[in-house]
Amino acid sequence: MNGETILPYLIIVPLFGAFSMPIISLAGRKAREAWAVIISGITLLVGSAVFHSVYENGPMLYTLGAKSPFGKANFPVRIVWEVDLLSALMVLMVTLVAFLAVLYSLGYMKHDTGLDKYYTLILILELGMLGIAITGDLFNFYVFLEIMSIASYALVAFRNDTWEGIEAGIKYMFVGSIASSLVLLGIALLYGQYGTLTMGYLAVKIAQNPTVVAKVALAFFIAGLLFKSGASPVHMWLADAHPAAPSSISAMLSGLVIKIGGVYALARILFSIYGSSVNMKTVGWVIIIFACITLIVGNAMAVIQTDMKRLLAYSSVGQIGYILLGIGIGLAAYGSRTGDIALAGAIYHTFNHALMKALLFLIAGAVIHELGTRNLNELSGLAKTMPKTTFAFLIGAAAIVGLPPLNGFASKWLIYESSAMFNPILATIAVIGTAFCTAAYVRVLYTFFGKPSEKVMNARDPDATMLWPMIILALAIIVMGLFPWQISDKVMIPVAKALENQLGYIATLMGGA
Amino acid sequence: MNVPDISIYYFGAIALVLIGLYAALVKKNLLKILIGLSIMETGVNLLLISIGYVSGKSAPILSEGVGPTQAVDPIPQALVLTAIVIGVATTAMALSAVVLIYEKYRTLNVEEIRRLRG
Image 1 (cartoon, chains in turn brown, yellow):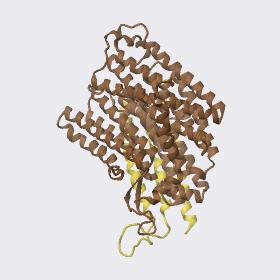
Image 2 (cartoon, rainbow over the protein chains, first blue to last red):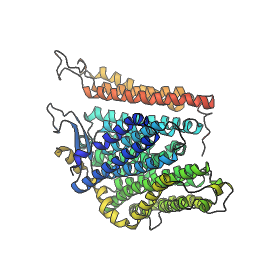
Image 3 (cartoon, chains in turn cyan, brown):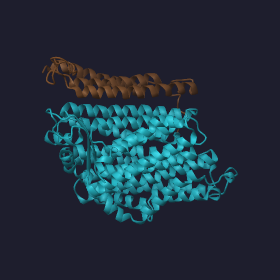
Image 4 (tube, rainbow over the protein chains, first blue to last red):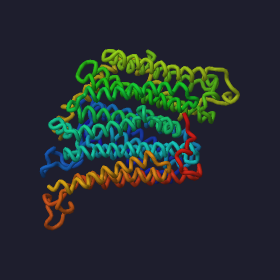
């Protein structure tokens, strides 16, 4: 199959689905739910096809506007979408988790109103993330970033009859707007200095003439994107926003949005645009320092939470720390084997964490759906009445801690291994973070297996539409855990190489059809 | 090119960004924070526009006597149009959230809107 012809459908399908949703909803609730599932299912198929095509045939380029990089006038008028292996992997991750979240919403959101708006927004959120993953143009990246952000502000504040959603939503909005402005400022500076917005050309021009302006722009990008990914000094919004959203949305926010809009974008800008034209060691260490603070603070704060979803949100902060650590080491040890391993670990962990955290948030949603509370003190003995849910939680928690037969083990191992090779102190910090993380999840499990309280006795496992997405995610975690090194060698190491290969990224752009 | 003319716009743009950032970080009233964010966005937009400005050239609209060489750089203008639209959407959303906040809390002071903890 020719990859370039199907690539635009990655945007067209969810866009069409989102804006036809209000019309379809006129036909009633069944039609609306079927439509949401069909659209996100088709997007998943297209996403898998794109991943397959990129995996088989190498990176693809899609141009909107002039085909030739040199154009008719002395500059080409065009926007490019450039999908390398990393983008394709992110596309697969987004479409998979988004599909499961939509499926889960059918049962979970049954008692809410305004559902046509909900499904419209969830598809727009998916569309924004897919756009960020495939774009090769800086301003196009900004537009998709804002599409994603605005949809997620609205979804965090979706339950606008509660004070919690609104307060979290407005905090998220303020922080997100500042971050977006910083990113736009960086883009403006780069355009002013180099006169182009295509990431590949920018890479060439920055390599030819690395000016102070480019470095200032890099600082703006790092600041803005660390905000968006919820790294530590500025993680406060995340712990408010992710628990306040409906659980299916929390799964998407924690599993996907902070990765695509934060970590992926950061990696793309650091490796594909700047690459070797800046002092990679310094920039790498800046990222590493933020990563260490993030993974200690996030995991430690998770231990003391009594609110289940808030615990999961802080745990997300901690896991972002691991991913950033991998990227930082990958940058500081660029080109060496340590760097490869660290980067592969970071990407692997990004994918794994999307599955694990989506699973855990979906479980939290099931618990809220049944019991109406997420206070851990009221949830003791849940294992008796919700055995399947508890079992799924056990798998998710074991995977996120990094126990061997599950997928989290391999990715965390790669990060530990590379950090030990790079600098033993970093490995120590990473292990301390995991100790906190273990403490937090053991506490939840302890509660679940404790003496049943009165309230818990009436609970039961949720119905099929909510149970299946959890089962699928748990199965994916177990299956991925059975082949850790095969996945690492066949997928993650090539992805890391593709990200490091800045010249390949530029060459794809120049040689594009 | 007439550099001193241009640099006024640059200083203005940076000043707007800083004023906006100050308001967003220091002010206590939600509406004032929102105004600060809008000012910051305007500053960034002004920076983008002034990057594309070439002294003495006309607007990039195809008309008689105006070819590609006589017009200013059209790309920043397209970018700023997009950025303005995005900004309007964000502001509208934030304003509607502020209305709901006021209904729930009867105040706009951020120090009193702190029921979320942890």
